[in-house]
Length: 494
Image (tube, rainbow, N blue to C red; front, side, top):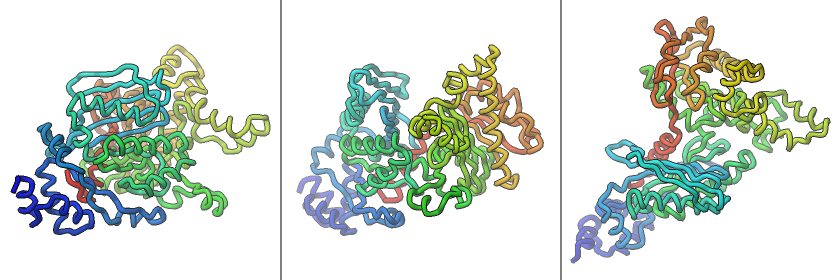
């Protein structure tokens, strides 16, 4: 009896590998577990794949019956194990309309350690598309690469990872976590099935630039990493704990119900990551943490968390609502659309204007706040106004959210490009808030640690009742953690 048959016989009482696999497919528990043990000995991952998802009932999604999907041959097992490396790797993908960002982690000693990360840009323009990658050893790679679609871009990612780490990388990736912008009322990350993909596609009318690209990323990953568990992590999920009075629009109920009109909120992946880290910094459990988190970048929003759960956020049905941003106007009187239409500017042009030609760009001609600061320092009145407008919008929401918490606030958190680096803007936002127990330490706020974007730093004065924190966000890390949690929940082999 050869070694493989001995192992099979020891764990399952069967020495026929094909028979063990067939029984495992039928869900026979006493054979499934030995098969998993055998596979672990071969240093392979056996992802679990949902049989079905009832898109009308998310509870069925979580309670779906799962079955094992096995590699088709021992030759593949030998290829994976012969590399002599830890095969527990998690890949995160963020597929945009013309880009694909990636980050790969190894799972060692219950920790996720980043190995490499990068981006494929101008996907769909083969003559102009580029690839950039960075490795934890400090090396970089990149240049012009022809990416006709997302599948070609992911092939380039796979080629890079094979060259950098292992030829058998396709088998070593146990899970792939996908950032999905809009999931409507989905409140948890989900293993990807045909029905889950349909749910993502059905939400495309609310995120037309993002959700179709997210599906393309999933399709490409299923082909490139066929043995990996595919997990969808939704940007809107974190905000599904908002009460109806926070997410309901005061429009006719039948219209809202027919077209799913409500506040959904975004940046949820970032907020979920920050919530746990901020709670730890102030010495509280997530379940007891009350915070106001300001994700201030090119896209900007504020979220208020009570007992670790989102109870309101500034973005709405789409990311246009709320704060002024790099190119988005944020809150405006909705009747502006009809007014401009009466002047010959139709709704489609107004929508493009509000999303892509407004905000800092519309007011100053610049999208980068650093350039706006330079113009303001040189005396440009429009730039000065834009900075004041941005700070005022953030302050308005912080004040409103403090009322929602009845003043019981543990921390204000600043993150993303502006939040992590712009000490002057943080000063404008926190100015004269001592009445609310919020006192900024000007020296700490201006320190290198608080402007590098590399560290989590407290910048409040010793007399402040509320902690003021600067924290770099890690959306990829959050996606990887949620992907791993789903795999553990469904007992996927690692």
